[in-house]
Figure 1: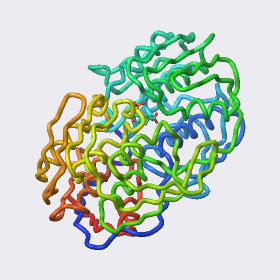
Figure 2: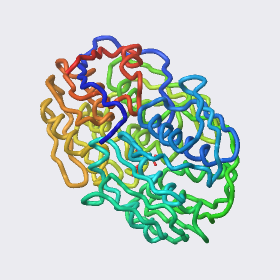
Figure 3: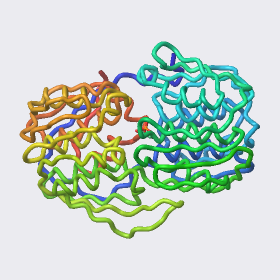
Length: 444
Ligand code: S3P
């Protein structure tokens, strides 16, 4: 179903290291911001330049979709895109299925954006994406007047009927989700009247910030955003900070390996993304922020991470939405910590690129770590991590988390199905080895 080239199956082995991790690293650009930059630049009038773009498979899939819909996108360098925007009503029907690859963000945001077009579209993706729930966007978009057909269980492919007259709604999200919020705001660009989205807990506000940067009148505050249809987007320059979620693997790695010191340059520190920093500090981590500054409208800093022994904690439930992508690596930090870590209030992890609670619990259990699964989290007993074979479930963040676990395991880990790391972090293996990992790739 997915026509993004299927990556050949690859496995990694990650071996324990004797030497500390050291060096200064640049992790790739933010995935969430890169998706949105392509979308808004495509709908804007004029030429937008995106610097720091994530050259990952997810974001390339989004760019390819807009190319198919008639938007010229130049690639002067891997991390740059020049988007020749076609205006709010300038997209053309692609005439083919639109393939979002592995990207939930791509699909959910596009569902909102395409609901406002005059033409029909069909969105699909890889096997993982085709299992993910889309009812959460279909239902409120239908309330706005959109017509979207899904496969059984509200899963992709999504067929989005064009030509619907959309009207704004006032919608309280049942589950905190930046993707659903953003889908409704993008549909709201095309809707009559006001679209207002309220969240049970504030989520990342990149769509709101970026809409404002592209000149669309929007009011937003943590937990609430409102806009009206009928304005125009004007081309602008976007600077994408380094992705905190990608930095997270190195933050935990340097924390765990004795003697380590890593400097991670210009990492995005939007408070809706940095829950893991707060949690790691509660566990005893030593992470210092240097040269805090604003880059492209986002707070960034250089993060200096030094080794520190961790102890288990009860993860504050309030922080869960601010670290929703960081639980796989937190499971590893908890396994390597002294004492017990309790994670609750994180049921959303079961509907990410994989069921992240189940896969992390199963993987760690195979390595000899005691993990008790709960419907919305897990209890993890810190202790020695053994060697062995674990399955990433084709989930990029699970693969990278186990690569970090291997650094401090008693024996090498073999991690199956690592090709999808390229969705969010192309070059992870090389960057990690440059910092002192002992990571090898094998054809599976
Ligand atoms: C994202 C929002 C989060 C996150 C995902 C990216 C975004 O998903 O898990 O990786 O870019 O808006 P939800 O909004 O579904 O929680």
